[in-house]
Image (tube, rainbow, N blue to C red; front, side, top):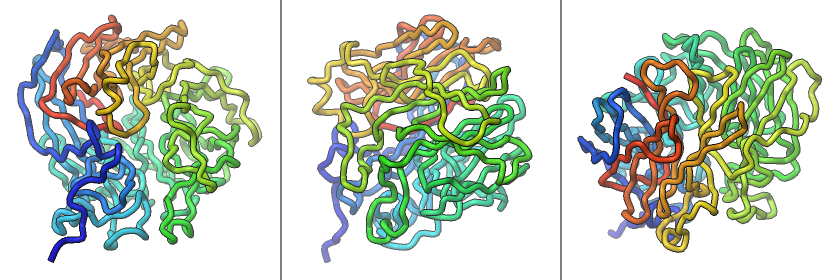
Length: 488
């Protein structure tokens, strides 16, 4: 009997050309290196990409609904080893046994072919904590992996301490205390407005738990932590359980809903301590950093757009912006945590370019900082879009350069990787022996559409204009979401 499961991926941009699923596991040693790879770099760059094992039975499945496939680039003594392995989630294992896709729409369990205990794809971020890797998807608990072999250890609930059914894809590590600061939204299940905030000591013990209720059931993809405060930016992408039960999308853009920022004390807070501040309807992207001023006010830097960046989830009338018109800028809010709830003052645009995937020297996370690094789209740089457009495939908005913004001088340096290249999220690597902020290297995966393969570009932040080393991969890695550098 012929199978009704699709035997090939849909003929859609998110499954075509450079975005064709890779479905590769294995290891390649001694990658080709062009240029000078400094011997003082000793560690591993981990990143994860959505990479579906099987063609979906949802025809227009979004590109980030795929299985988490983790890459490890191990750099030591000027040599690079590449290793890649799927996270063995419940979804991955059961679909492998069935020989076909079993999961339905993005974060809609009512559209699945079978019932899952945990629906995670573990495809959004990969972080190091307590000598293991945690593969993260914000609708579920983490999956633990061995940092050396990339073998999946299993679902990780911190020895049963995890109080919520969800766990953020963007936990923050305090560089001084070693604490992991975390939260889960929709923390009591799909469609619930509950937020669970918790802190975890470096040994894995939970040190506090606090339950909150958001004004709306909206997406809280990233958040910010200072030495004394925690901030939750709520997107106007809202969930409705009844819509999901009817086979609809988990998220729907709400043009009537403001951008909310919830603020609580980092330590010793009660549920009643939360304050919800508002700004006009807009889309908060990834956080760069946050810190406290001498006057007690909080500086909060993040990407902000006046349009729905997740345009594939339109509003109730089906309206969504043309992707070419979406422009996200590095923006600074100043929040007075002692003020009454209400509207926030107009923010300051720190860099007016179209940017995202902000990273910093994480030794200054939650503290006053100077340097930020991010992806930038500047069509004036000379990218040959007529040549690469037909083979790009579809993913998140493309970025053609890496940028370094100096918050003290207001100046921005730009690295342009080439006319047939686009960049993915960078990571910062501190220079060995230096404690100075921003003294180090920037490493990013780069798509080469001429060779249809991937490269790693390493920049020395002392000379940001050119790559110090280019590391060639013999394969193509589709767009990923997030990753992190882990020093040896």
